[in-house]
Image 1: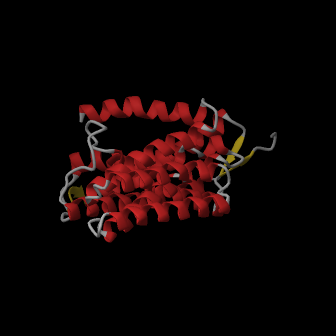
Image 2: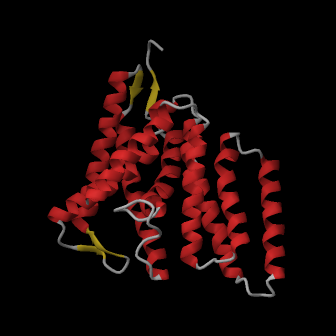
Length: 274
């Protein structure tokens, strides 16, 4: 627990500095770093041990956040995909069938899903009211996870998904949802007072409810991968948490949903004096 708190005390301020203080180009750089580390962890988990194919796959994960930042130009996306396919299958041919095609496919699947979904933070960061929205795709899954953990520790009695995540409880999951909605509304209240934006708290509540649900789904999805591969954690880079995927698994699911909700139900708008 102490290590988890220390990592949060260091990591969250770093994320805030990148999102709100440094130039906007640092946002895709941060997402690219997280994507590469997460992809490496996923490749290691599925047993993809071919060094050059792993390198090519990691480079795709690295490129996606910058591709998104520059507007997702189709021609560059197709070029990178074509080069990747040629290189990977050239390595596969040279291996004389020692490279398993299912691991190649799984590796690309994880690289694309991890990087493209995390890049929702980059797309949200390109919006007109970026400062109001950009932290939400990270904040919401973080607080839902934390709320579920603390409520589960003190009140948890009924297992929620014992096969996938033995420590998860129904009480913890409900508590995480409540905390997520509460913090999301508080987030809106703070921005209303420190900026000139108008806030739709009903829409923010929808963000909190739906975002909390999909956060739980994301956590269970990556727990499935871990149980399937018989590993406890994806890595050890974050003491008390495990790997990047252990910490950002729910962000991978929640960030795209928040991006969609912002488009469909914009919770922030310019104030009358703006």
